[in-house]
Image (tube, rainbow, N blue to C red; front, side, top):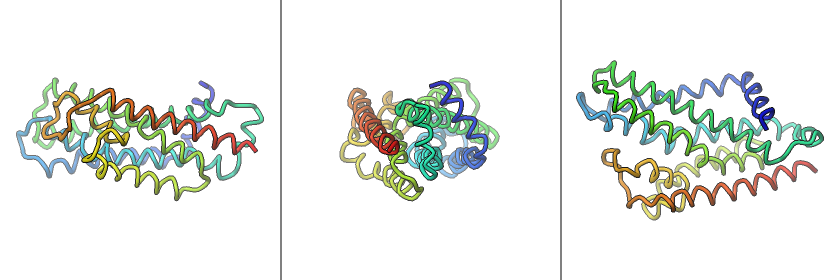
Length: 241
């Protein structure tokens, strides 16, 4: 398993576009300045810079593209059939890809964290206070870790396809579906369940919630992930033929 993970990171060194995608992490920290005024509560600024569009749209789309890129070449050129000769565990192979997504997600949120602090302080909109820095760091780490599990179904879809189009289209539908499902029931979709977990302490200003139910939120994510692993296992076994 560790060898598989090491191999995945070695392959990433050749894909510079993946690291350039990290620049998307600075989008909301900059645009958040247009939604707040000077001297605002740091949490109000962070709501826009790190908690609003970043975990709902920007990062899910980025992780969807990343998942597709991780699976594309090996599916496109049927190199998976050569890997199975070794042999390699299908689930181990799948989770080595997931571990890359997890690390990348955390790195993305760390860039968001640094950009939020720098932009807010340098612009003079937010006074630098250690409690607010630690608050943002904690939330960014939570988002980075949980959203990787939330996007596991997209990685499973990518393992079933040889092209880019279907996985990326599914990613867009998966992300924007949150806006339609969340007002109905937050515990039907992993992304909306993640938002419930993030806002569980009611410490994010004007964060709409139906009342936090952490067991249901985690159950929703777990069910989707179990189904995703099952689908991925079937798809990888099919590629063995």
